[in-house]
Amino acid sequence: MVMMALVYVLYRTSGYTAKQVWGITKPLLLAFFLFFILNFPFAKPLEGERVFAYLFPGNKCPVTVATISSGFASAIRFIFFIWIADLITSATPTGDIVLTMNKAKLPPEASIAIGIAFSYIPVLKNEIGHVIEAQKSRGASFESKNPFKKIKAYIPVIVPGLFISILKGREIARTIEARGFTYNPEKRTYRKTIKLRTRDYVIITLSILLTIAVLYLKHSRGWFGVTFILSLFGK
Image 1 (tube, rainbow, N blue to C red):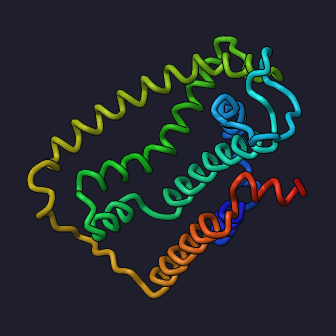
Image 2 (cartoon, rainbow, N blue to C red):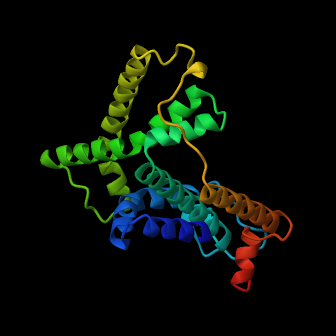
């Protein structure tokens, strides 16, 4: 949650309003719900922990503080990844992202693949929006309050979305091949040079220190785990 708050602050400092951030998050709520629910069959309650209910008959998929925490953490990670990806692609040109990864000695093939993936996120959002509008024009409804019916209603959207993604991927592969990308990419020169500035080094240093602090608190102090969460509730 602390990391989510930091990303939200970055959104606001980048010129986003709270309404715009909500507009990015709202379409992800269904996926958030799916990540939360689908985590229960794999999450195990702690020994002796109180069971509030079961999702399925036969005492299957117990609902406890531990399983709820695990599902919520999985769903939050998904939202966090989308926020980060959207913030990077909207605040930084894709070309700069690719050049930065090349400067970090990442293989050119890997950096261009990651750059394409980042730049494809807004394209995919637009394509999915077009598919939804097309399905609505055919009489499809996506406004059901039943979550399972809503998931079923989105199947005609997911399948065309995957098909469009495959076609786009093939087009991109042919395009970069036609431009000679595979001809000795390590010797390629660039018109623009990326240089790290003082604030870049500051952010990198703070990120490394924050990561070390979180790992230390988690593995040495037992923070951020299920037991730690239960202790916050006085369990």
